Image (cartoon, rainbow, N blue to C red):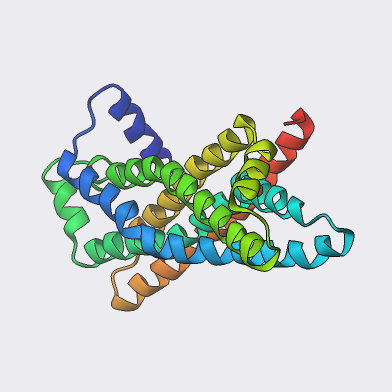
Length: 240
């Protein structure tokens, strides 16, 4: 982790050596290619939130507030958490497997022999790529979750689409959006660091690669939950 931080400082000073094409490929893999699974999961999460809220609120004649519940929960917390967990299982494991395979094949040692820093060339592009794409994935996850809630509101509660939209818009603020995007960026860094860390710690056997991928997923998800708890407490103390 310390070496990755030093590598990031070298990047800020313009001295880190990695290929821009590698960063672009990683961003493509973490961004566009992740949209289908993010769409499916977050749409279903929005549907579930909307349905559970509707069952309770309809008894009080307050079904319009389904829009508030779904919007606030998705934008502030659930969108970032679901996107983070998806990327931990999808991309974090991939990072660990890729770097672990390089360890098995002694490619990491070859980089060091040639005087190329593995942190700069392999780890840094992965951390940058995922941390840059996660905020965009979180925004997309929020949108899909709200769409899922709207499907419940319009189809089950007979709400008007425009009415649901206006209620959603009124319930959200820029602070809510900022908190969700900030959490997404933090989760991106945590997942990428967990994947790269477990990959670089991988042993020199085939089974070790599988263990590294499993450990990366577990570490990433636990880190996401802990970070969510910390950020939630801080926001509560600050009153935002």
